[in-house]
Length: 150
Image (cartoon, rainbow, N blue to C red; front, side):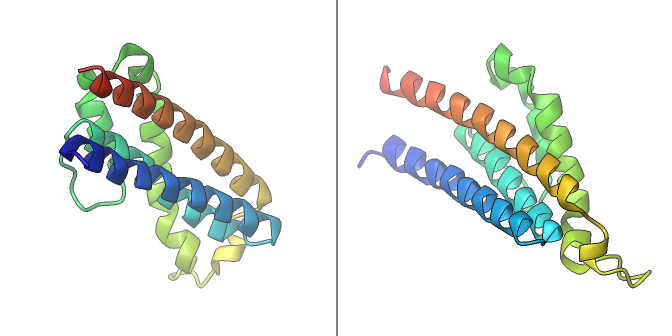
């Protein structure tokens, strides 16, 4: 396996893990655990964005919200994807802010996570992350074709 194939395989695993987290988020929502769906959706968007950054050789810090790096390095991406960056970065930001509360609730007010989120919240987030994943996968596939034609 070449270096490029190994790298692409590694990045593809990020997307596979993102898909799995989305499936688990849907399952959590169906079972009445919307807060778990929120947390899993956050993990999915984080994997998607980090995969894209890695695909374009952008080193990212070990933080949960790397959406700002998409904005900073937007010139690396094709125009159609640049148009999606504000939405993807917003989803990443919003979900990273909800990462802790979705897991622990509001600890200061002693409100458990299941009282902070409802099924509609989970449904909306899952749909947004699915759409972001689709755009990221499209970019990944384009880049793979480009690399293979070199």
